[in-house]
Image 1 (tube, rainbow, N blue to C red):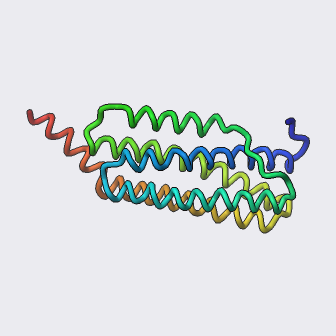
Image 2 (cartoon, rainbow, N blue to C red):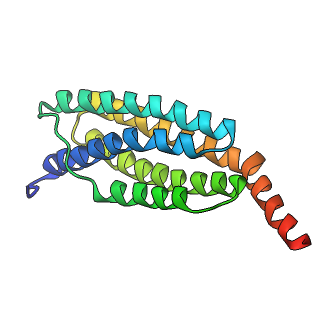
Length: 171
């Protein structure tokens, strides 16, 4: 459907984001299962619950805009999830796998941060205050998830993955 104005574009991107979140609900359990670190597994499991809440929140935004709840296939999320699957299929050492999973997850988070930031801005411009507030809540959650992944990488996972490469150098 061609967008004739910013509201049409808002709905189009909202549908794309809704589909992206639904795809992520299916992918996060696989990522949690592939994680070796208990902390990383827990982070993925917690974010799965947050993502389910975001799906519900998007449904509320659709209601606020008085449009049908419907997804539009999101090839970007499909590609990011496919990259994550490729990572999980590779034969990494456990610590390196966790670092690779964090990198894949942060790509997803950055995509979602961009989507929610744009949607929130458009909703504000168009006078959809409640929708903007709901979208901001999801934006904040995505930023928090990204920060949590960064902290986990910096305080533990990356150092363990680096230690593995130093062990190989010593042989």
